Image (cartoon, rainbow, N blue to C red; front, top):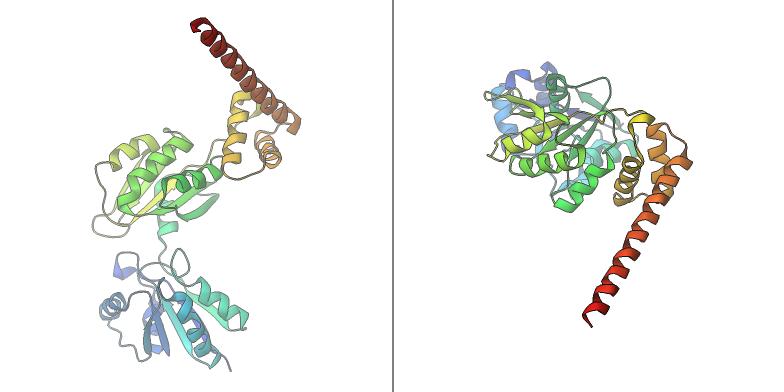
Length: 300
């Protein structure tokens, strides 16, 4: 008889937001795998719960090594409760490896739904919520961060990101560069906590604000790209979009097809614009070379 893996959502700020089932699961679990055992201790004290099961740490540094141990406990019939510092395990937090291992062994995986910074930020942002995608944390290195943003430059769904406060200004500046300074966004800080703040505005405006320094847990919500009809896109814009996709790693043929689909245009029209731009660049280079040759001959 196998056990059960329980993924438990924990408060993202206000402990009063803890789901009612969380206390019962904390008390009944055979094993509690916690991202931070000290935070777990504070949580159980706040909920007036005394765990009876074994408590182990389960964080980014030991996740790979500890997953087999927890999977074995599940196979042996244990009820394992997984909690992270805040929100739902596996969502930009430890958990995915253990879930995958449990599923592979045919072990039941269930969840105690709880607070979510992604959905909370999305709901209070004031931006469209009918379609959205969660992008997690962006890369720390500037070049990689720009590349990742360029991959979604034409994404029409609302985008949700997590970010560290000390990188927020650089991230917003990069977003303004790729998405446009006027693209609407919301920076949600310290959600459900005492100093909760939601700052709304264009990406350029928000980047300037963040340059002064921001503290706390941050979730950024960005409006999706506007839907542009064929008449709104000139040849230069079509070429720019193709190049953005190429820089993100797409082959030219795939980039042209994607841009044409987004713009509602025949692929041939986008292809012709790219070829024309390339020919114009080559002609400009030849002219520049001839001019440089004449100058060199004149000074000889």
